[in-house]
Amino acid sequence: MSGPDRVAVLGGGNGALTLAADLTLAGHRVNLFELPEFWDALTPVRETGRIELAGVGRCGTANLEMVTCDIQEALASATIVLVSVPAFGAARMAEAVAPAVRDDHLVVCLPGTFGSVAFSQVFRRIGVDAHPVLGDVATLTYGCRKTGPGAVSIFVEAIKLPAAAIPADATPRLVAALQEFFPVIEPGHDVVDIALKNVNPCVHPGPCVLNAGRIEHADDFYLYREGMTPCTRRVMVAIDEERMAVREAFGYGAPHYGLDPMPGVYEVFVEYFGEGSIEQAGYNMRGPLDVSDRYLTEDIPYGLVVYSSLGALVDTPTPVCDAVITLGSVINQTDHRAGGCTLESLGLGGISAQELTSFAATGRL
Image 1 (tube, helix red, strand yellow):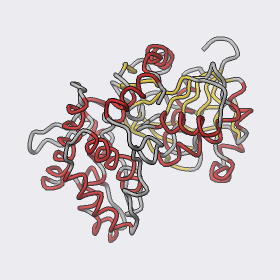
Image 2 (tube, helix red, strand yellow):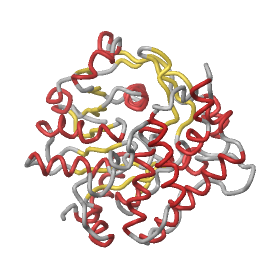
Image 3 (spheres, helix red, strand yellow):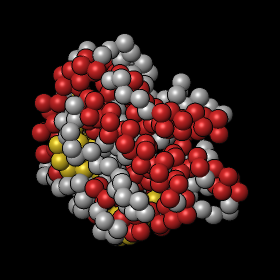
Image 4 (cartoon, one colour):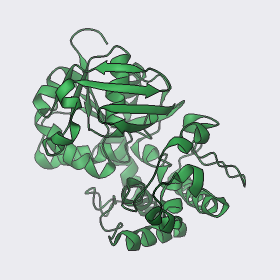
């Protein structure tokens, strides 16, 4: 990146720290921002300004340009803003960003199941005058994990990443900007298309629900290695088939980025991360070790509930999704549907499928 421009990475979890470290080692100037309420958890990164990156791809000590909980400071010198927070944190991050956002900002959620819509609606509610380009990427750019305080590891890197902007005619600008950092970025149709290309909800909640006893009992557990058996895979594929049926009902064709439907084949992210990624990455990713893990508490309310909500809009039943939503809600004693990402929760209740895709195209209700 030339001149004084920098990249702002927002968040403090696996994805944000990995993005900040990897982009720094690639030669970019990175401002890392975390919300004040989570600032203490960012120690020692905030004290040293460094992140240790290991695994595939670039490795080494990343010396960040800035680590801050001041959003004005983080965004003042940045034009690209990469948001990597749990889906349930998008609205809170949008509230933090609102006072500092500018017309020349490009704000991208990775991954972004309607993260761009959450930002758009928060900005509208607050009365933000700026009109930045908002966008979503279907999944995170890496399979990665924090491995210690101030340390992250990349197990696998994406080979293909669909993205889209709201309004949709800004997608070429978004894709061109992101390809400077991630050449595998490619354009999606719109942010609804991108939301329905997030396959994490197909992969994580079903096996977690079916392995709940094992997760609660075990001292150690590897979902991809131990929990994806023939019966759990049947549930995963059934959820994926419902997701693809919803996509087809909306008029979105291939690629669907689906699971391999062949019995006994356990590839789950082959289109995103390539063949063998389950062994390369999944088998080395520990957990979940608790039923309150994000594989349930994020991928159900901000994943399966999205599939179900959009399915209802186009008269496409999602009975397996609905069953896992119900069971996950019982397991966690939380109504994941009521607290999840629906059109109503996004401030889009009562609109038709055509009105939703029109909103995705124009950014206007």
